[in-house]
Image (cartoon, rainbow, N blue to C red; front, side):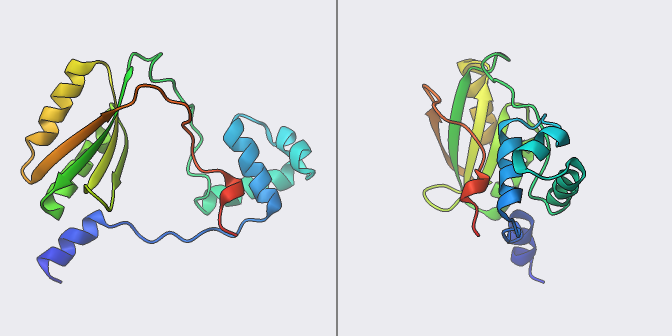
Length: 170
């Protein structure tokens, strides 16, 4: 296998295939997306199934990777991270792109995507202030192979959510 092939395989994700979901699965997912702390008894009333049947479905949805985890959604501003910024990073090689992926462990990085278009990597950063954002930008810009970084600071957020189970491919 060539060195270039090995290098690109590290960055490339596997192809995702939609899971087989019926209307009840979608209603369970919708209810959990609104409030993941709902009990199986609550969910059973919503979808008109027994609590054990709902439990089995949720277990299957987790096993199949449809439900990736159950987390608390935290308010970045209330945690002191008030500066939401999207960075479009253009790199000159897969090596530089791979190097950017190491930033996934940083607490200020909320999302990291390889993209097609004007840049190579899209990074969602929630910084404490302009000084910490500037320091973060300097770290990225100092990486070998980073050609440019464009930053877009969010002034207001009107909608921030994950995918809706109602809009999944059937």
